[in-house]
Length: 380
Ligand SMILES: [Zn+2]
Image 1 (cartoon, helix red, strand yellow):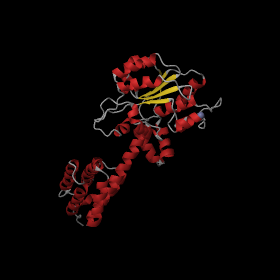
Image 2: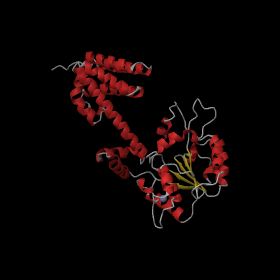
Image 3: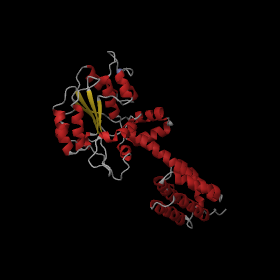
Image 4: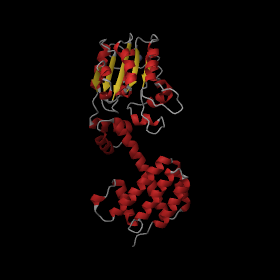
């Protein structure tokens, strides 16, 4: 990771460079600030900068070409250790360490600037999982640090979310932080530093990283995610300066757009009584998986109700976005007192059946056939 790959944060980058250039590297440094603003990318870039051997005086970034930089680029730098919270799965006899999820971690970090705990938690595929840094991690780390560094002057520990340590882990690691091994640097990032044991917290040097200004979020969204400026500004307003939150909104919007398409398709084909294509529609929806089908039917219930309310021409009661509203201008007259509850009922029972692991293709086609019967052509 190069500093130049991370948008913004010029002040933090400058402070980090000054530490390395002025030989004032702390034993333990923590970047603190809210989630999703690039703190972990900054310490990755800092680690690479510290160990880069191709930098010339005055350079403001790693060279990108020396052997050390190549190892950082492929995330195979032998003197860089990673600590991050993980989840104990049923099959595991003892609490896991970061190493147990090394491949998943490498995949997760690949090309990533902004960390997102909920996405990381998803990889464990376990309900109510709370990724934790277990006490086994400290033993593993102590063992690894006892070997001399191999290729670089500094052994660097990149540590994501020290607040995820339990007290037992923290007490064991405290000793290492208090009496560090020579040429070993701990670089940490915390979203919730108040949750870190004060004995640990007080022993690390800290830099606060501020959230991105709204205008910068919008600018990153247009330049890196090719969003139209209007959409980018709207998402930026809701992001509270967090890029991971903004990126999350993009994917939610994409999902919603897909559900809206599926809804329109269902209504159009049902109106045309096109059973052949409805069969395909049912299969396509089933292929999106259980969670998405549940989400789709909740969405469909909402749209049916909104279109019913739209008929009363009290706009302040209608909660639809611009595209849904435009569609509703033609569609809402198909929804009336005689079918609104029945349609909602069809979608709601689909939710129950799919939640109970019913066959999506059959349930969806059944829904489609019922919609054919229930869609009442408006009186002309
Ligand atoms: Zn280099």
